Image (cartoon, rainbow, N blue to C red):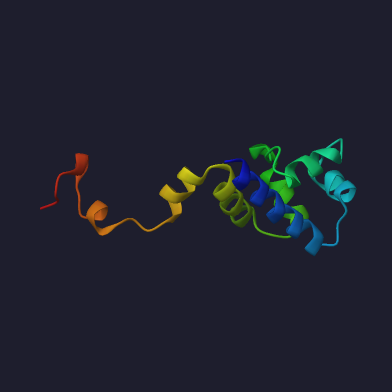
Length: 102
């Protein structure tokens, strides 16, 4: 899980750098008091608080939906897989409680 968080941190850093922002500038844009919080996230030692997703998306120049979808891959991979990966045919052909549909 830690390696996934590090990958997520690299993703955030790439977005920040693509916008030409320093950690300090990003911290101001997202309403974080200490820019070291940005450093912690970029090294995989934390996660964006959900109530700040929109502020982060605005600051990084992407839609909130895209930001959440992408960070969910790193923060909650099981939920990401359930929500966004195609189901296998055996799952889609089953009805409630795994019984075959008529």
